[in-house]
Image (cartoon, rainbow, N blue to C red):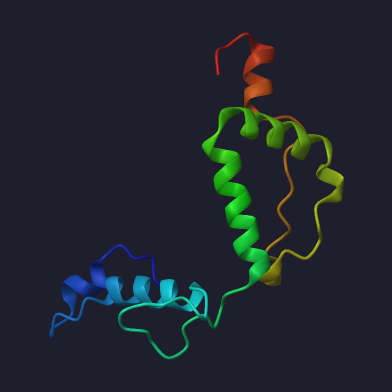
Length: 115
């Protein structure tokens, strides 16, 4: 495990760029297996899943557009009981994530404060 703070790279006596290597390996492991790259690594795509790819695409679309985000937020707070109990690797060592009953924007609006 690494926090990627860079301390390990700074103290390495042979100047191995450990944080950069870890980021590259994580990127390669989650890259599509058939994606062309200049210097592919063995294991490219080992962690790739279509489900996760779809979730990230949905997330980036929802959070890139204010209307889509508001619709997502509204839906998530009302359908929170449908949140799956198993959330891939997250729930192996943690409790499942569940949307709050009211969004932060709703709570601020109720207090009369701007978003």
